Length: 591
Image (tube, rainbow, N blue to C red; front, top):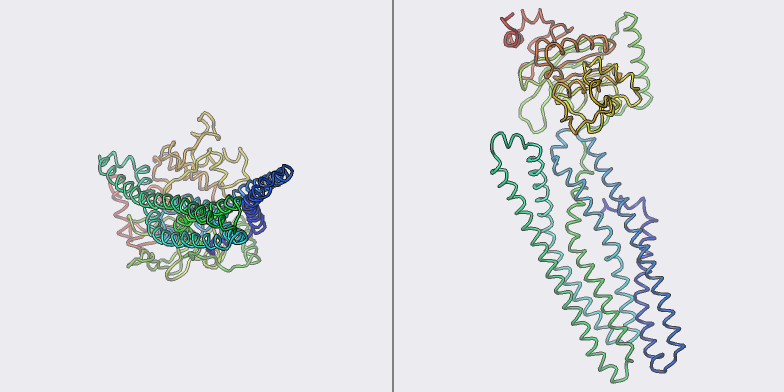
């Protein structure tokens, strides 16, 4: 519950007024039966019309005040619930941004979506129900029983007995509900994952003609969820039947015992009306609270799932570099850039791998081992190797998507682990291996790299990225982009992703196999335009094709996570057998 209290804390005043409004409604509901009893006992029996009108006016005033309290309480409660839900979703989203790939894999995409949407919805509903139906119960019970004792002690004990019986019943049913709702949430996760896989992988399913198999898999997940939901609904059905039975038995008991008490002169006829109303009101609140309490195990499971996300310690934590040091680093960068433009050299490379080894969490073998090279400003370094040789992992280490197991990765002479992730990534422009565009417009995607850029700058960068096709679109920069850029071809998505990275003025440009979908002519034109555009920065190109990296300053050849060779194309053709095999497999007639 500490997670809920954490999000309630900023809204303490709102909570106070919400509970106050609900208690005003409860007090009014309990006062009306007392006024009714007095009207019958005194006004009707005495025939005093003035007394009846007086009590009737008082009942009307109390009803209006209680109604206003109920309305205000409901509105404030809905407002409180919406604010808590907003804060929770923001907290979960912001926390997820701190996760590494390994951290995120612990939960899974489907589970994170369920936690952010469904689980928080359930918590919001539980907050509303608890305030409106659970919190008033102690006040109703205490005030109702006290008023019953004021009328007759025997009837007061009757109400206490019935109240205790219903509370014991609520505890028993709640224990049974806990296990059911825990299973229900895990099945909802599973259903979300299966449905998401089938929607995103529909082309693969059709290509392999696995529609029937996937249909059975989905049906199985839906049936499991349905069976568990039916079990939960049976609890509600049993509870509702028991509730009506207990209420009716209580009313019969009050009429039976109350009739005898009236006959002996211990009560008056109007008191039966008040006692009946007290009993109905108390049992109504208890039974409604019981229905909410049945749902609380599900809410508790949801809270635990949200708490699990919020309390997960990220594998990658920010370095401790203070803001003054960060500002000094920026000044050093500017000085280095100025020195380069004047033709002078510098002492430190922009990026350096110093005997780096890396092993993925829970893996048995090193993905990278003994990596040692540097990439300076104005220098283009390429990384090539077979599938699974660790090329993309190198980029991830620079961006600090992972932390090295041994050795160090430095940027401008500082270990990336000592730099805030925000400061580190501010200096890096990255084009991922899988070109991904966000839904919106082309301009929206380009502004992702530089939110202050103008239209002229965007068109210039598009020209550098060989994305001139944008000018031929009906809406140009305002052309619609579907989620993931699915309304563009692979080559168009790659060029737009490159343009987005070039919008950012960075110290390091990383191109992770970002030219694979381009034809050779476009590839050559793009590399020529890039050379001038990023001449003042360090460039790291991760490539599969030899043609892309023939003229770079330095080529790193990876083989099974180790460096097999370093040098220019001509040198490697003579000294590196791994590079020679890659080159001969791609270039016509051999080399």
